[in-house]
Image 1: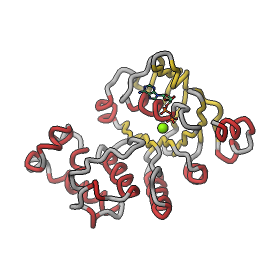
Image 2 (image 1 turned 45 degrees about the vertical axis):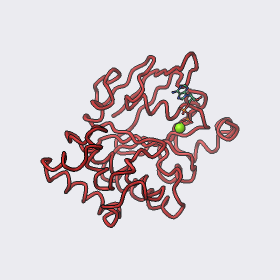
Image 3 (image 1 turned 60 degrees about the horizontal axis):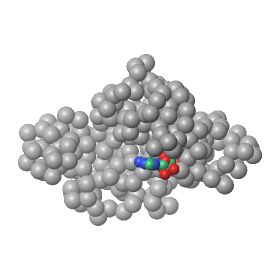
Length: 249
Ligand code: ADP
Ligand code: MG
């Protein structure tokens, strides 16, 4: 579904991603773990096209996409979220979803700032789709709240809904549970499981290992820009060098 071959991303000689090859399997949640600075976010950015690769190849649904810009990858169904919430604080929750929709004039930041009057001519089905997502993710009551007033967990859910507005086939999630109150972590996990059960393919960076164990199979372990192991979490837990690399960082 999504394949990386010998992907490198260097920052002035620093090998943040140092020859990573992976295969993301359809219909699964693949986990990507590793200590801080391992290169996980950089690798996700290279897969999504928000950062160009220094070298290597990325193939999505049998097409080489290494040189495609992020928005074209998103159009084909490869969509990412960010490690830090990237919602528009001054827009309502519903507006945040509409801004994310494809082919919407609100897609650009300018469109977002110009505001609602630019959305009026847009098709009503986008609003309907947004409202279906809000309903599904328990956020209907928040539709008209400014996104900036939401809790950390609610912002994460908005982030995921924004990505889903693009009808992804593969979703790249960077720490979707970071900064989330424990009571909402379980809720987000349940949403991710239901998305997977509907056939969505997910690659997810996460550092809460019990969540990784619950959601992700297989799990890929990165350290210092390289893959140091992969397989089911239960198997990785038994591998001394992986536990060491992970815990020592
Ligand atoms: P992780 O997500 O696994 O914590 P990152 O991908 O964020 O790791 O970072 C990997 C390494 O690349 C780190 O050493 C980080 O400092 C470096 N790095 C990340 N982004 C940049 C950048 N834009 N410029 C320079 N160095 C960067
Ligand atoms: Mg990161």
